[in-house]
Image: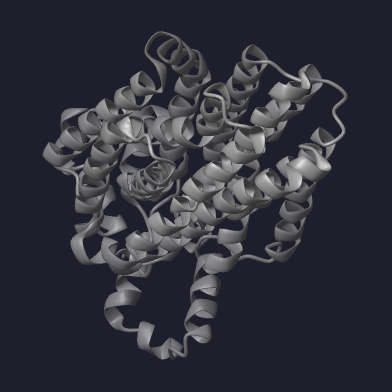
Length: 457
């Protein structure tokens, strides 16, 4: 399953990050300008925002599996259409539509890992998922360096579209999330998925038929599954988690996109040739593979909360010293470390946010946070251009360093540590009995905490 989810993440990251090499290569040919490049990025972020919101609603309403396939097929087909765009304006329009599918992928991939993997190993598998995404970023940078000078930027969209279609075909038979099935009252289907998981892992079904589990299952079945409105994210018991999730998502997305989307353009504007700029970028972006591997090794050992704090601190430090590097070797080495820390921070933040919310509205919670993050990124190209025009690359990177510092300090003092919480406990904490009584809850509110018993971890 992690391979199938990871393939979607790989091609999503590939298509998402090819903009860096593609936009840099368009400047010398006159196909685009810095202003049109900014519009390209802004429309990309707008599509990503819409896709994230749509994915959250569709996943919670219709199911994780259908939403998973729909978004991947959407951006795969549109990537192939983008390869034949006759001008920059049409390419921007196609990119906007393509980005709707791309924005959905991040929400669903991280959410699927949260719902299928036990918390004791979730950090490791989030790191593996991040590795697939980082590999997509790195391969995109390397192919951009090798392919664009020979076949033009159009070949990059062809590669991304064909690869995404292959991934779509391979994962067409992925199982539905048993947590979601049970939250919607589809208990027999949830049990069938659980039994298949047990069968594949050699666990006798009889081990799960104890009186205790039967009583718990009966209690769960007796409760009526209800659709929980999105307003619950802003209710008194949940809003603190929602705010923290929003802040982490905005900072990690902004940092990642500034680093991956603008470095080649900065290099070109500073006088490097397109070929050398893309070569520098390919070497530095390989940090997107190494960073998530660090998560695989240490995230479950030290906890996901501590991982976020450590990676955010290191990203701030290396972002602070990067602009002052002059020697080409130091530019590559420090840039590589900066990218690795930013990738680790991104992986842990996006992977941890879905854990903040119960199953009934988990994907809408994750979708909301990514929607707000993507909306913020719509304006980020103009912010970056303004900083670059007035303060150069030093101003851009130091501003980024400051944001990492703020995010790290806020999460360090926050009392949210999902490493120690079962997903079933999150439901109880999010809508505690005292808060429900104080708010004179409705029957619909009462059902938010109804969730899986066998999938409680």
